Image (cartoon, rainbow, N blue to C red; front, side, top):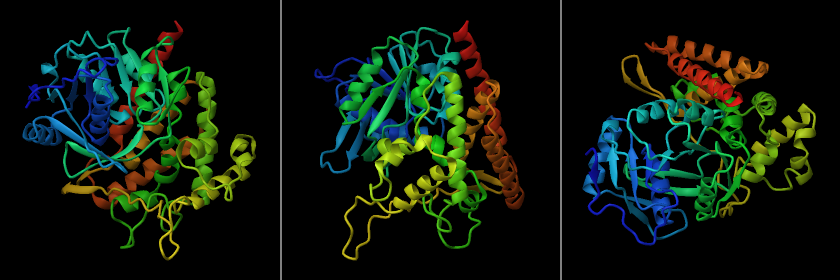
Length: 443
């Protein structure tokens, strides 16, 4: 129920107040894991949750009330279950009181504008920090532009720091793995809060690297480079909408079991180069793509790719870059560091199924986040490039091709409303706000 307290609230004398009272926007697995680990590591005594009204919010309210506002987290390889009592859950911004010091956005980055605009209607004068758990390129500037209070610090994490899923409950989650390294960039050049977040990451054995600018963190998200190249295509749409034959397809397998082909590897390399040019223009440091994928995400054995090829990847000609990237994805079809079974088979790392679209009513579909949020993120990046005078022919071609394929799917399945039009308009609105903020900063 809106504004209801847990039976005792969060009271623990061992907790520090480095982040003060924390309001987490979003109630997915990432929000649950973040809340539980912040409290258990002593970074806040009071944690509240906010989510837009709807069926999920009703389920959260019901389960929190039944469980005395206690949420739980299990972690792979650890027997003990971590729990915490959240102070309140609200799905009505009018009931938000001015008691929060830090707001964490644990929603998709495509929802940031809606969340901030909703929170703006509440009189939250105490808020001094907003943390973006999984931003897109430009998200920090977007949020800064939408804020009425210029003194609020906005911190971008490069990406969500774990792999977490729900456990047959809206208030229980399981964390399977943690990221090796997360980059942190603040709108405040003299930020102390990034050090606090760095300590929080350290409590989970994650290396938190502080960078000079939010964009330096935001461009270090693996999905920015991988998802558009692999998933903005007819192969993925056919699988999502059930248009393939009965054989199942997987997200990270080579064609025909999955979408990965030499052509899509070429798209990935070209998109990376175009984004690198934009990052240079915007004052951020581009990444070495192969080094980033290997060192910050998942490595491949040196028998497959030599260290010097990883370190020198950015200097190679396109053909060699594409070859090395194809070798990487061929090398992690299985987990090369897992223990083989009695038949010599390794864990099938790449067998990640696509989440399917579902027809809720005649011509009305529930659409999965992948690849449509990736499309939205690409629209923002391309819009920033256009406004900065940076040509992105590969990205433009990919966007147009995906839009055409979506229109064909709509026609084939009799989908009443465009599955991308509203998403495109929303993303173009984000571009406008980001550019306003960048111009304001230059004044």
